[in-house]
Image (tube, rainbow, N blue to C red):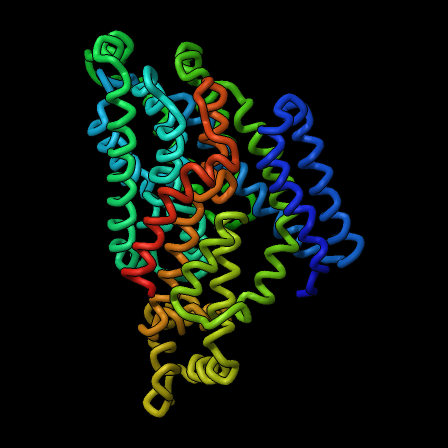
Length: 467
């Protein structure tokens, strides 16, 4: 990898600053010109990578990641927009807590993106008579991020780890204590904030404006078939772009088979996904230098403790997309602890079928056994790569398991700290904005909510599990 010039991180910083400040300082100008800002800054970085560094592979890889990202986000947006949930009665603070808890569990089955797109509209409707910023922000905290920490389906960073060889249920087995603690703290904080908000609304107003109490109703359930196609397609890796083609086909099927009345009840249109698609073109393009610099230098940033990887991957996941940040820190973790001679010894064991296993050192032996356990197909086909060996080393030697957990929890949890930390965040904001719900600005989100509510939770999780 060729190291990019540090100054080329500037377009990314400029884009983040503009996203943060322009909606506050010049909202009219921003609504008209955000496509130009995103595309121009992205073009500057792309020109540098193609004409200057000639890093065609990096650009191609980033383009593929963007297509996969926006196809998943967009298809789930369309399918979820075809399902209308009629909510029941008054949204009390306790009812809201139960709803968010269910949303956190659903996020591990449908992914944080799928759960967010499915549940944000009924969440807005059930709180419509007192909906305010904290309802949207805590929904992002819990449903769009922290809730999806138990399965690779739950959040994109964990899915990338699964594709690299981390077993499907390994995440739930090792991350559930952090998930339980983090979720409990956030739900408790939400209950306190929401209870105070609830008391401000006079009782007669609450009864007058609350949703009807005749029961929950679900329309457009045929879209669950299309949702299942999208989720199944996530696991397809070959041939190239078959996954995306199936997702697009499912989205088209959903859109054209959903009744017009259902779309109207959901206030469905394509503006939110259009805004996200344009902004993330710029984000994916301009963050290439930042991610490349991170991959080259992350192992040099400090002592490689579990706390370092928790805070390091987390803080950068707040500003960069958390999926590539996760991969960069996983690579840095391998570079910090795995030596070339260890990899060579394991490769030798693979070639001779483990004949010298008894005389191998402990770490080498544990790595080979982990390969046999988690990469059986690769061993059988003799296609074991250095990357497979690195993951097996981290999995097979128990002392390093906590580092994978630290990176996983850091990437997932900290993704809630800004609108751009995780894909669904900006989408939820866009849907709320379209429905005229008050949402905080970029900086307001950070200073009024992330720092007062997320940071204490993150400190507790760090103190208990990673200190």
